[in-house]
Amino acid sequence: MTLTILSLEDEAEVRQALERDLEEFDGRVRLDLAEDASDAWSVVDEIEADGDELALVLSDHRLPGKSGVDFLVELTADPRFSSTRTVLVTGQADQSDTIKALNQAGLDYYIAKPWDPTKLRNVVREQLTDYDLRPESTLFPHARTRLEFESWSHSVAK
Image (cartoon, rainbow, N blue to C red; front, side, top):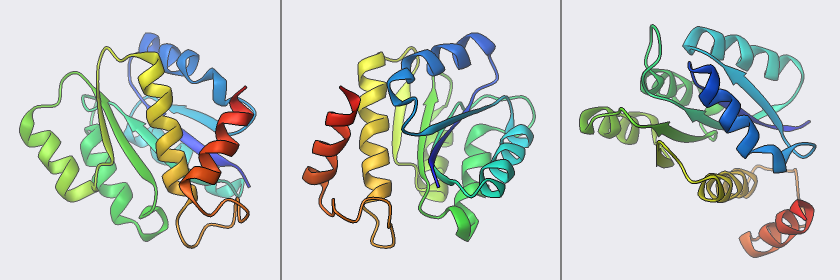
């Protein structure tokens, strides 16, 4: 079982930039990419079929068809993904969209485009840490505190 990050972004160049900026997580987490909400649900099905866990979704807001915020609302309403961490990575969400993401999808973080790669990696590391420190997690039973897990994750990143 592997922790998975799903990046939901319709622009190929931005998807590539996210993938590049998250390279340090290669080999420790699975990174899947989707272009729209329909594609994202297909990827979610693949993640589950493989026995992996959807730990984090990085989602743009403006997408063809259903918005990223609407996708996050649907995802977090599904009991299977109620613990999945959610980050809106966008430059185009207005205040009402952001409020909807916060109130209905329990948005965990907001990153404005263009992002700082170091900040993005720090947010991803923090969100994965929070996901693993859930009481029901069995991934790192030896690291039951944030400090222990962060120490582990930083040593692996080197």
